[in-house]
Length: 82
Image 1 (cartoon, rainbow, N blue to C red):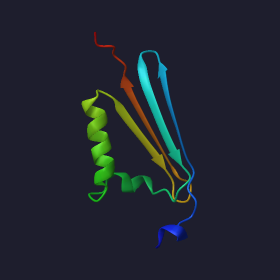
Image 2: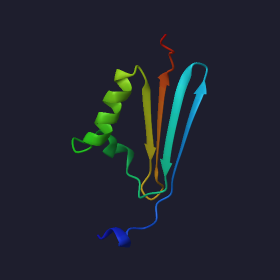
Image 3: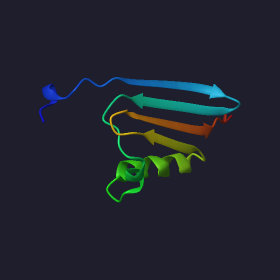
Image 4: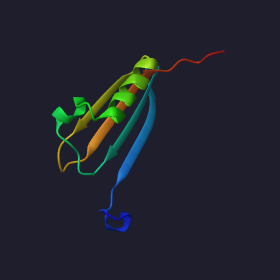
């Protein structure tokens, strides 16, 4: 499929600090995927995101449904290093 034939995709993001935790949320209205596909061997991008969240002592939540887009939330401790 050519890029000019792709459907328009809306993406929103927010970054907030709450109770010494940094919270990043990214959502889109794309094609989404089944929850069971999150743990498939071919989903290396999702695995990489989980590994990076773990290295930050954070938590990654991914929710998606076919036809309903995807929401990814990263929550990690916010520490000021002096």
